[in-house]
Length: 491
Ligand SMILES: Cc1cc2nc3c(=O)[nH]c(=O)nc-3n(C[C@H](O)[C@H](O)[C@H](O)COP(=O)(O)OP(=O)(O)OC[C@H]3O[C@@H](n4cnc5c(N)ncnc54)[C@H](O)[C@@H]3O)c2cc1C
Ligand code: FES
Ligand code: FES
Image 1 (cartoon, rainbow, N blue to C red):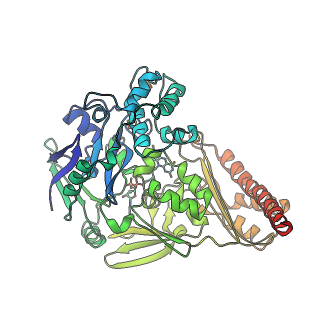
Image 2 (image 1 turned 30 degrees about the vertical axis):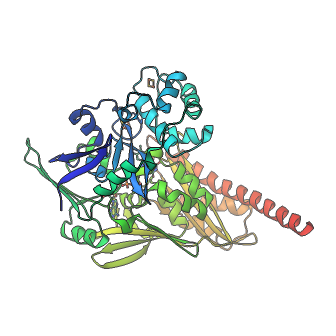
Image 3 (image 1 turned 60 degrees about the vertical axis):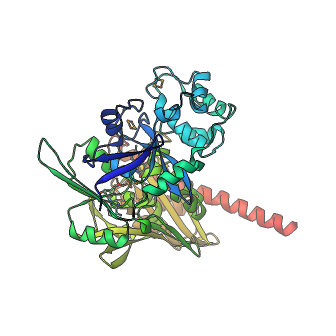
């Protein structure tokens, strides 16, 4: 065990001892290191002013990802490289991203600028193109109140025209330094608050066995995955977390296994790491993932964290419940598997026993006769929480629905299947009449609430409309399929 956090910063190993494990990377940078280039806007992962880049060794190269420093706890940097806006011009010359921002007048008050620069830097390092759609996606988690996005988008194109900077991820020195920092033992931090005397403990186990032992021993511990929910408990709700167990170093929880089209997704797999496999499973799920938070949030936030948190407006649950997913829960050496929908008992109450944790979520193969759709309705397209999220999975035989699974988020106190609606559709022929019957059955299934995201009436009406939308898309899909078959037959 060790109590020192070690990471690479500007080519040197930086050590942090005796720090509060819930100190954020942003607080550490600004208050301890006095590196004030990284800014605080919202302290809740929304504005991107605090964006920094974290490099992690993967397959012999360093992979760079943006994160929101305002909600990331400092210990997550252990064994990684941290790049801040100061790092980019540490040698005195501006990085092409910075030069492009200057050339294109991409900054006015400058408050958001370091965050934009870091998002563009990660984009540059990952050799992503300058296409507007990809750049907009990369910048969706960065807000600017004065410049307007035109000059920033121009800078994103311009940075590729300037003399190129060497890619850092392939630099042998960085790789060597990071290799030396990789540990085989657990990081274990203990901190006593000098003002209150509160003792805080943080452990980052390396194996699933070690995690299982710790969860069994410290039953009241807070499990921390990507901290995109937990971070806000500290920064916004000022909660004191006394014992934390981090899942971030548990290799077994970071894998996705594909077997004959079925996916097993470890609880610590981030959205960014899951998106390609999920897009393969179904393009609508891929698009849903792309609309979860921002790149920064998707680089940290996990599918396991979304499920474990059990929010009624979390996006993964309706999508995965309709898809027929199951959840594997582990306690000690034992695992149990339950249908995902059974995990959500009531608001804030899940079927998680003391000493248990979410190990993985399992998606069955997408059958050939499956017609699947998922829709997210939110006030803003990007970086917004759903008002309603509806997912529809129909196993079809010609135009008869053999089996229907429908799940909604934002319609009840938990993510929930629409039992009456499913019953109205099962074994029925897809037609406008059936759809209208199924839509009215939603009134039996749900009595949604009104809140800041949407009124109850809006929620119910849009849920009904989503069924109609699914039907219309099925009709379009069928028409295209029949035309394709005719074209193949005539060829
Ligand atoms: C700016 C912003 C935008 C967001 N946008 C969206 C959005 O569009 N859609 C959406 O659905 N969510 C969104 N979220 C919420 C959040 O990102 C997700 O819920 C995310 O998936 C949580 O995962 P995490 O790894 O960060 O979990 P954490 O914050 O680490 O943990 C969340 C909860 O799960 C528990 N937990 C984590 N892993 C396990 C495990 N393996 N076993 C048992 N318990 C566990 C933790 O103890 C905690 O209670 C957003 C959050 C922010 C800050
Ligand atoms: S300060 Fe706004 S996202 Fe971090
Ligand atoms: S330049 Fe002022 S907020 Fe973006």
